[in-house]
Length: 125
Image (cartoon, rainbow, N blue to C red):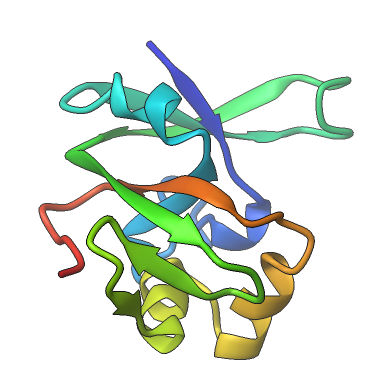
């Protein structure tokens, strides 16, 4: 089963699932994630320093679909048809408390093709 790492800020207080608001995650390398559609994936956090500590799986979720998006910098995303996806919606559905937090999270990401990994049947567009 494929594993996917999460920042502890996105894990619920009980440590058993994602925060309720997080219905998807945005990841680099759309083609890689696309091949896991319809499969269950294990969600984990690192117990200490990433890649140098043990992984703690906190739940298993079904990966409904991976939606291709283009990151155009500064938190701006466009769907596969070139339609802008409002940052406020992406931020909320990705579990961020504010739109500014979301934008800051993606500041260091270069412009690229990415995938929205959906844990529900929701889709943009």
